[in-house]
Amino acid sequence: MNRFRVLLLNDIRHAGHDPVLMAGFLGPILLILLTRYGFPMTAQWLEASYSFDLTVYRHFAAILLMVTIPMLLGMMTGLLMLDERDENVISYYAVTPLMKRGYISYRLTLPTILSTLLTTMFILSVGLTGFYWEIGFVLVLLALEAPWFALLVAAFSANKVEGLALYKIGSLLFIVGPIIVFFVPDAWLWVGVWIPTYWPALVFLTGTSGHFFASFIYFSIGFLYHVAMLIIVIRLFIKRMD
Image (cartoon, rainbow, N blue to C red; front, side, top):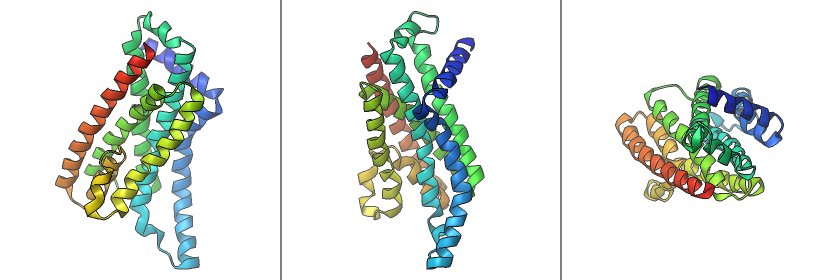
């Protein structure tokens, strides 16, 4: 536990000197504040000016913004891992009592915990959706996406510049998941099954529609998919480290 505390303090110190990393941490908090106060004002303005009811799309807005939180945290963690790999810090950890396994465990645990806490804060604060049983399924899937995205950035990027480029491309791709779930006809829903964000969006939609059993089935499939993808990127990152 003391070793992890040292790593956490080092991460805070590192993030304080890097605007990109700071944005990855503060981004979810700013997103919560902007949604909490900005969405009602925007909805009121659109209703008064154009008779457009934005609240009809509140569930789509909620899940679209929710999937952004683990992506931001994953970016922050992935860039930290790239820095540590470039500076050969990971090799140093490998010969300490922490070892590579402890290092990877810490790097996967931190974004998972932060994602769970901040996503829960989002749900409870912004008022776009209620908190019910199916939301727990969504939180689990989103928590798994934070370390997955971090390892994706770290495993497939040679440096921070490539990492940021991959993050931007991945972000554009992953927001497609909720769009497919909410707006693509049912006959074409299968095209999104390979996108990780598709599954929490599908669980969220079925949950808000009151279909608990269907939500649980989709959660089970999505959970297995996320775990499998996480195992793959862990192995790829370990191979890249070696």
